[in-house]
Amino acid sequence: MSKRRAHIVGWGKYVPARVLSNADLERMVETEDEWIVTRTGIRERRLRTETDTTTSMAVNASRDALKVAGLEGKDIDLIIVANSSPDYLLPGPANFVQHELGASCPAFTLAGGCSGWVYSLVTANQFIETGAYRNVLVVGVEIISFAIDYTDRSTCILFGDAAAAVVLQPSTDGAGVLSFELGSDGGLAKNLWVPGGGTVNPVSQQVVDNREHYIRMNGQEVFKFAVRQLSSSLHNVSTQAGLSPSDLDLIIPHQANLRIIEAAAERLRLPLDKFYVNLHKYGNTSAASIPLALVEAIQDGRVKPHDRIGMVAFGSGLSWAGAVVKMGVNVPVANPEALAVGAAD
Image (cartoon, rainbow, N blue to C red; front, top):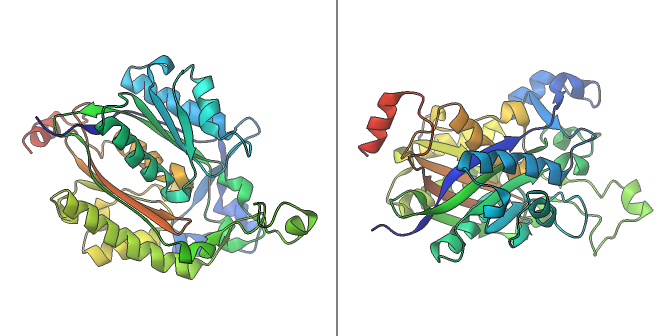
């Protein structure tokens, strides 16, 4: 019998109805559609509406994931919400999500920025591997727009709001989390941070006047870090799983910048079509980025039963996180012949 692993049995997403296009940004800040597309690959992003909250977005995505898994809120044993844009300073959104879903289980929020969902996936895997919990809900949700300075064209073009969730259950048939890598380099932390609003520099009129309550980013340093870590972490988790990056059926990178993905693909000598990309529609949705891309890849028919999926994220900290996940037989199959091929692997 194979090792017990956490495998994905349900998935769901939620994106706000409001679309912020590059043309809209042209009217807000000194920028151009061609400039944005050339440098990032982003064409539009979603922003929260008046009725969207971090909790409501997470709950909507979670309900869809539970429906796919054939479960209800009362069946959940643990909820982990990856989020750095909570509705309130205290408590984190996980507690509100638990209540709204009608669950009676432990719940906690993991604030890991763009790497947060993969950190949460790996954390959930530990609980399932040990047998502590059976049904674990892992959510990535961000209303990152609340921390964006829309007078700063270097950051406001990049980010959007979204939520996505998966349900994990134990598997002993070889499906699930095959390998992972988590990392952090706090010496680089101030290359991507919010300098005001915490206990060191509390909210004040001066903080607001200096716009220190918004995200600030050293784009060049983050770009170099991201290319390096995306390629090295993908190589490391593939090797741990007994594979090479070229053996992976699909790679889902953090959706931050198309140029980062292209540069990493070149370093790994992999074709770009092995990478799933949806950032042109949503921009960088931080902790929601990888699960949102995973859900859409499944819905688009890019994921088949038994596929080995590489996932790599990077972000504030500066941190990184990678994993290889083998899908189970519950993934919908667009082409019946694909199932026969996958089953033979």
